[in-house]
Amino acid sequence: EVFRYWDTFRGPIYVPEHDQHVIRLLISGNVPELVAHLERRASLGSLWAVGLLSYLEAEGVLSGQPDLTAAISRCMPAARAGDPYAQYVLAWALWETGERTQGVKWMEHSRVDSKFLPAWTSYGLMHYILAGRNLNTRRMAAMVLWNAHRQGHVAALTILCRAASQGHFGIAYRLLSYLAYPLVLARSSLVLGLNPFSDRTFVWRPTEAHSIFPFLKTKTPSAAAQLRQSTPKRTAEPR
View (cartoon, one colour):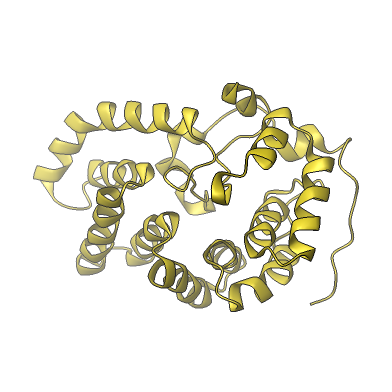
């Protein structure tokens, strides 16, 4: 049944506590009911519901197009209250709007305070992107990504292989990545397809890293485009 989810959404969406009602709504593509349910949860004090709503806002599911400013405004209070999901969404939303220093800061909070698996991978990815030609920073990013892999996040090893295949860690690792990449990609794609709601598979797709996530590329319209007609418009509240 989970494969129906991929008919609507183009990537994984993390559902904390593996909330079965939220997962059923995602699989069915019933976004209006999903949003209403999450809004109720958020009004009752659920911080992870705020994080998930903020992610959907950033993806463009709520208003028909990505709205990073509204996502930042929505998730900032939950992030300040210590919710790792909201901190993660806030970090990437700030990053995408050019506030990279603040983005890295909030990703560090999500990673250290809760050991949130997607934050480990994203923290390494952020530093890898920032490293440029700085080999020491690349190596530090690689260590973070390797730790994320050892803790169970499936995207981390894929990112490492992609980086190594471009020669960013030397010729030996480049050759090794060529041998390992098909198996790594197959494993990642299988786990991702079967577990799109787990913290082991959830990963933000930053603009600069599209080539790192080939298994997320698709010509299928995104959830935002497909559901625009059925999702009620909302006006972003002022920050």
